[in-house]
Length: 631
Image 1 (cartoon, helix red, strand yellow):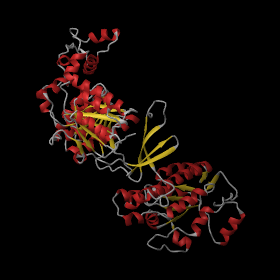
Image 2: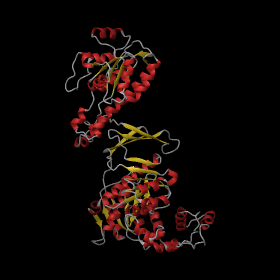
Image 3: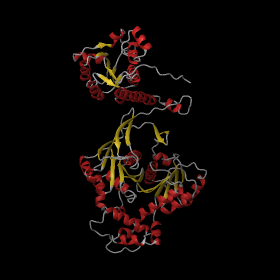
Image 4: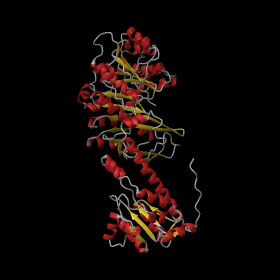
């Protein structure tokens, strides 16, 4: 174990007069003005290279560090300030007899202030610099002076940012050309934070340069670093976290990328809004990649209520979704995708966060304008669409533009209860190949149609971004039932199956013919909710009175036998599961909802039992080999 050093004692003073300052900055913003002020207080200026040149051009008297140390800059400027006369002047403890004697013997003068920036390593990486250029922009002398000055803050002031110049000037003006201990301690804290950020940024970048070595080290405990450094740049505060009492809250970018995956164009997004937006955009981006079709999703509480790709509506679907066939045919593909996504489960989509894979156009904006929704994320917006959406919710509708060039780090970290979990991002994109590589059961050779494969992809990518355990049903390029977050897989099937039944029964002639009042007080969401309750039918007496008041005439009851008879026509539905089916009970239950196709990872000891059940129901089952748990 390393020995712990004892305090080096000396005298301390609240106000320390600044008599000599070392200036070495890469960001020369306001440096001439600040040094002009220091010179007016008779501060002796030491400087290096380009900084010294700029100060002399401004008419200031400056001594080169090489002249002061009597040691020339060398090795292409790699060695300039790494010298005992510099670090001794910064680290010498004032009032310590031994330090004072050694400084006198070695002709080391005190340096009371250091003004510096570090080499622009982060900007070099962001600008696409190659490996060698990035290495050259790792500062050595700057962090050394920074830490020396900050360590000895009882007597020395470390100034690391042009935004600090004004505060330092005010303090010196109020204290006869000196700085106070309070300010020096504050500046030292900022300096150590900068040092930590700088080194952590280098570490994070260097890890990305290891390539295959990084993956190898993850399985080799001897070569795996014992410490992981993460640096976050605060971007902006959030009103609160998940709940109003969870304050403070904020959003930060991860260095060295120093980017967020979106830009806020309108509104003020909250914590859950951003969780929805970023998960939703990943979903539609992957759907677009996998299907080559414009894609959309409707998110609530970090799970999709619906998701879809652009597939033309049937006439019955047009009636159920309250759009004329002519208007539906005129929709742009991206508008069509969102219309489908929103109508997967319009009850749950109330107050959703939308995401689309393509540019938002006028058609898409007009659909959103009529819906109760919190916001949208998309790669771009037409001017007309942006104008329409910016006026929604009295100007508070959240509009995010996705950064299409954003590349997330390969590793994800999550802090829970004082500990940090790490895992590689789930970068698997489900494609046609996953659905066709292992077709375990198929009643006919051509049973796996292009439409079925498309729906398998839609359902599988949807559940990839659904809280586990999860299953999802799809038909006609859209989700028609999502069962999320259940401990039992068969319960997921039952939950999602109930939504599938509701989706189907919204197309029942009795539901389509419900005689709603036509006055303006009855809103679209009222009709959505009324249809769902009509299908469910389990009214309390008090509820029935309010429900019946929404109609011109009281509707005839939708009988259970009528529902059962209608559901017998259901067919061609796909179900996808985020993990294997442990028993055949899920297949038995899924058969009630017209399931013809199944996509699941496989890997259960009961796979054969599940396959046998699929054969009994003439279902085609594909084993993707990819588990999709999401937590």
